[in-house]
Structure formats: structure tokens, C-alpha cells
Image 1 (cartoon, rainbow, N blue to C red):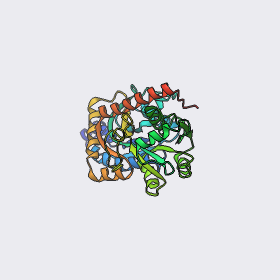
Image 2: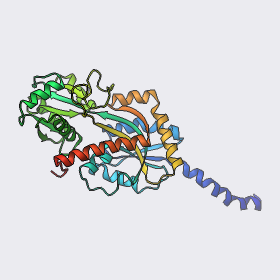
Image 3: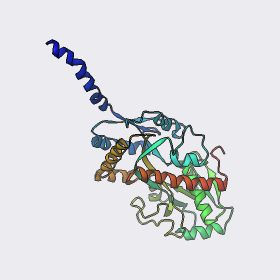
Image 4: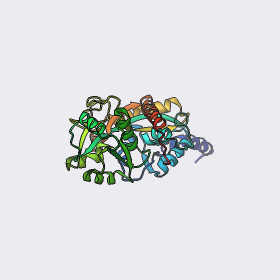
Amino acid sequence: MNRRSLLALPALAAMARPAIAQQRPTRLIVPFPAGGATDAVSRLYAPLLGQRLGTTVVIENRPGAGGVPAAELVVRAPADGLTLLLATSSIHSTAPATGANLPYDVEKDFTPLALIGAAPSLVLVSRTVPVNDLRGFIAWAKARRGQVNYGSSGVATTPHLNGALLDSLADLGMVHVPYRGTGAVYAELLRGDVHVLLDVPATAATHIQAGTVKALAVTSAQETPLAPGIPTGEAAGLPGLVSETWFGIFGPANMPPALAARLTEASQAAMADADLRTRLLGLGVDPRAGDGAALAGAARVERERWTELVRRLNIRATD
């Protein structure tokens, strides 16, 4: 090798570094354990996102503390598109609404990139409740004010907030009974000790098919393939009974607009895959292909709804 070639090596190496850096995998931080619903969504979505980006998307589960450590990890990451958060309503909508002490600002410290799906809840009643539609349940519960209860998986959880929303809109005077997980609630529904539960179709389906519960309405704004034949809250007689757990992708704040646009476009291209959409429906998630504005809007609407309800009813996550 001649002297000119030797002198050229450092320059060539410097040129190669950015290309090598761009080959680093993208981390998709999932704030829940492996094996759960959000993790399952990530494992269907990540490979297709990686294909559209021309890179590998590696899933990194960071469960615990309501997803706060996972979200904080993304907040503190460089805004280079290599660390993303698969968030749900619990992080950007429910937690701030219920007064959780968060080490970040959900509006200012993230870049919303893409909405990828949503899951409504079903209004489920025990087979011991002698009604078959929501109007009938409202009339039945009003006649037994203070004697009808609704179960949840814990104080300030989504089933609790949904139950409180139903109770407030219909002015039923129901009693909230929190449990550790919805599994215990279904056992009480079977016995008739709990009268109503609002739960997502993915876990409710088995109990509906087994005849343990009756589904009276779905909390989506429009009819959904996740609950065929089940009317929306408005169609069933209770306007305003709208609530969805959304799934979306966020990056750190201050991402360059061109980079954010590239990630959004890649996500929308991934969400156009017919097989992915079918498999998400199988998980109980209605696929969406929204951009960052759609995600920010969904998070804000849910956050404002729950903030108003929590303040009015004095619901506290520490109760």
C-alpha cells in the first residue's frame, strides 16, 4: 500500500462511521412484562416497522411502577429515533389524570409519532341481573340505588374509571368494589355478588362465550369489529359512554421534524399490512394508522375526560 493510500484511510474511516451508526438497532421500550397484551402488540408490530425503516427494531421490556421508569428512559434518551416508547393510555392519560407523581411532563417531554390501535371496553353484567340491554340495566340499577355494585381491578385503574363514568352518566349511585385483577371480579360476577364490570373484549370474550356474563354495550365511539352485534353506549341509550385504551409510539422531545415524519410514515406503512391488522384484531386491538397529531389528540381527550371525572368524584390513586 502506498503512502497516498495510507493517508486516505483515516478519511475513509471517518466517512464510514455515520453509516455504521445508522445500522444500530432501534429500541422499542415496552412498559409492561413479556407475555402481556401490550407486549404481544409490540411483537407483531416491531418487525414490520423495522422493515419499513430498513433496520432492526428490538423490543425491550421495562415493566414496573405503572410504566413510569420505561417512559422516563425514553424521555432521557437522545432524540435520534433509536429509542421509542410503545405507550398506552395508562402512561399519558390515566396516570396524569389520577394525580400520579410523574418525573416528566406528558405534553412537553415526548414527541408523539404514531397511533397504532385502540381497545374499547364492554359493559358486562352478571347473568343474575334480569336485563338484556343497557336501558334495562339503568332502570334496574336506579330502582336499587346503593345496592348495585361494580367491580374493578383496583382503584384508579381503567375498569374503575370506566365504571365510575357509567355510574356518573346514568346517575345510578352504584358502589365501587376494587379487586386485585379482573379475574377475581369475574368469579364474583358468576356468583352474582358483583353486578357489573367494564372490561376489554380480549379478556371478556371467554366469559361471554361461557355464559358467565352478558355484554350490553361497547364504549367505542362507533361500532367495532371487536364487538360484533353489540351496540355503542350512545346507541344503547347512554350518550357520552365513550372510552378507549389506545396504543401509540412516542419518542423523546425535540426530535428533528424530518426524522419524526420518517418514523410516522414507516409506522403507517406497517399498519397498512393486512396480516398485521388481522392479528391485532385477534389480540383485541382495533388497528389504527394515525399520525402524531392523532396520537396526541387521543391522549389529550382521554386525559381531559379522566381528569374531570377524577376531580369531580375525588378519586385518588392512593386510596
